[in-house]
Amino acid sequence: MKKISIFLVCLFAGIGSVQAQEGMMVVPSPNDVATTMDKLESIVKEKGMTVMARVNHAQNASKVDMELRPTQLLIFGNPQVGTPLMLCSQSIAIDLPQKMLVWQAEDGQVYVGYNNPEYLKGRHMTEGCDEVLAKVSGALGNFAKAATAP
Image 1 (cartoon, rainbow, N blue to C red):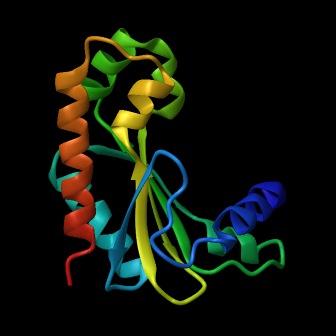
Image 2 (cartoon, rainbow, N blue to C red):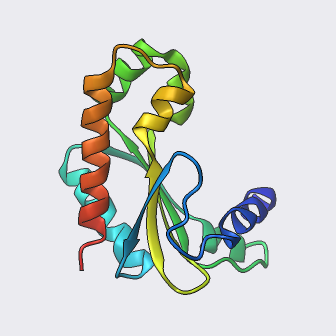
């Protein structure tokens, strides 16, 4: 757990603006991390997704006497959507279920980030799933929009 916390500190230390890692969509939120994540979890459940976990990385860091700005991860999915993607490219399973990250940058700005489905398409050389990927892309964008609403 300590190694994961250190990794996350290093990963997000440089993100103070809408600078995203390759393949990551990033949306600013006017709300704090907890409020943004509560909204995200609510809309995901409302849309019929199964929430597998909500990970509070800052809370976990404090358990090993380390400090991390508010950082939470939501892991969720729906086998009716994920399974067709895996049938097109089984290796995409490493990136499923879906994940959305909410964190507070050094400057205090809160962001929602998630994997861009088009990036995953290229990463896994996925063929024949454009319709499903478009659906996933639209859903993730809508989830982020709802979570970041004032």
